[in-house]
Figure 1: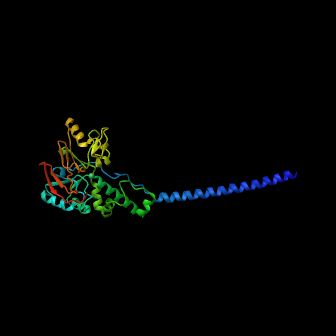
Figure 2 (figure 1 turned 120 degrees about the horizontal axis):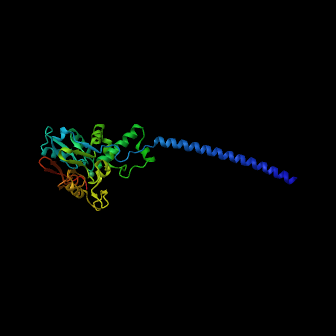
Figure 3 (figure 1 turned 60 degrees about the horizontal axis):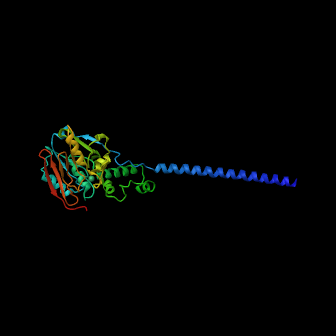
Length: 311
Ligand SMILES: [Mn+2]
């Protein structure tokens, strides 16, 4: 009997212990769930999704008829070089009543006066396409504005979110974005990825086009960055892979019943590059080369010598 009593006592004590234990586990679980929910709410309130690289853009715009009827002058990659751009505009004898300027992108970065360059180009009523450097500035501006409107500092944002690899926090694109007022931002944003000028059978794009893919099916990032096309048909900015995209573009136009010319920039290392159906206008101004303009009706190239601003 003694043994049985002891057993009963032991069982009671055990039941009591396990009840206490279960209650404790329940309380801890509830606390953990509460804290988890709370922290998730705080986190999601502060989490801002960064727009993907080319979130806000027009892929293809046709130049207005009133502008395509003027004498069109294309200008290569300016990269924030204000003095030489001003000099070039004087030398080409630009007449706003008769001429229309079209910039092939990369108005900004690498050179010293990006903001002054955008102001000047905008004031001339020029057209433009978006370059890879313009795109980075636009992405920074859109992020900074979005954080600003929510009262969140960049430091707080970076603590919880990763910036894209090509948008490091210490970048000149961020500095330019910080100086961009809303008018200049709207102007830069208005530059499409591809400008179509059907009256002259040509397209303007910053880097290049794939010959065998419909225009509206092409990736805007590639159109602002490509230099070559690889053997598998994909574009790359690496010049060691495949061949220049212009080789494939020109071959395709020769076979086509409605061939199109492409005016582009971006490829400073290949410099001025004239082929039957492509015209490369980046003559390395910011690296101490030249800034070039192309008067389309005369097929005339006018260049000014540039100081070296970047390596
Ligand atoms: Mn470029």
